[in-house]
Image (tube, rainbow, N blue to C red; front, top):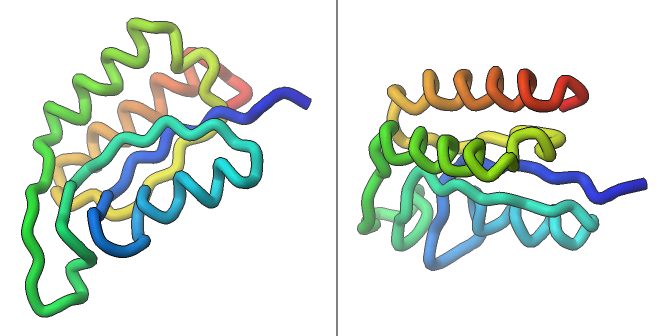
Amino acid sequence: MSTLNVISIQSHVAYGHVGNAAAVFALQRLGIEVWPVHTVQFSNHTGYPDWQGQVFAAENIARLIDGMEARGALANCDALLTGYIGDPELGAVILDAAARIRAANPRA
């Protein structure tokens, strides 16, 4: 069986293990190739009393997907994993990414 390739679109924290900070390592340990796309970069989980960082604009996330598509990566993507997105506008970007992945790889 060949290696599975997964695009993981979700948050990332510097301190702690949530979002891509948790998912990437766990999936890699299962032998899955993960292509992380971070929707936010926060100091820590927002469940703490305070945190710092930023939510990335939907257009920035869309450009990352555009770049991956330009490299032919979407044809090799087997799945899309999403989590905390931080901005409702990212929903449309994620739905578009899913459609583009399916168009490039109908087995995804």
